[in-house]
Image (tube, rainbow, N blue to C red):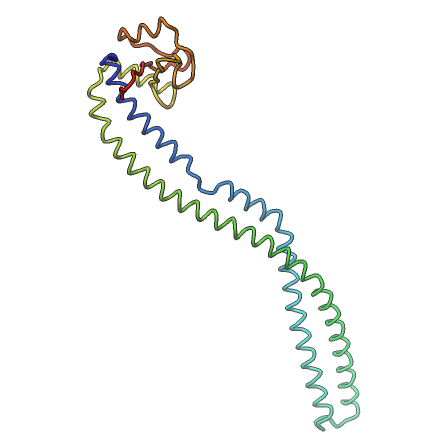
Length: 241
């Protein structure tokens, strides 16, 4: 049978180890941080492609509006020219000159629009590629965050359930052992106790070999610390939990 004092501490340690593991799991939930970093990288690298697409789209819209406006003026002025509303030769000459200039402007605008449309196709394809990548990553991030949120709630419930047993186990341990145990926990930043496997004779926390003399002292009920990680050692007996 294991030493009863250390066994009671071991039962407390099991609770604390479970609580520590739950905290660690909660702190390391996958909330899509890698995907978020990749999104930022793609946004940075794809900014020029998106900017080019938006610029071409804006220029095409402006050119189409300008062309439509110019053609409407030509139609309007030609109608005025031939419907008899303009009678003087000077007014006719001015109107003809205006129509000529508008037609030249329309031709230039159409040429410019043709060039913009040639650039627009590849630019749109590249921008859509960037947008698809960002959309896909965003979907993954949302999914991971939802999963992490659900798991976090489950861990909270489990933590409270296990924590509710701690006070009873704490009260069963001698104050002297608690002081040593708390000191070890403070030093390691995690757990204050480790087990020694009966066959391998290694500390379960750090893997350090435990000398035979130390094993004997543990069996005698003495409080022995691992020479490496400084946790309180306890020998696990088969069938003991």
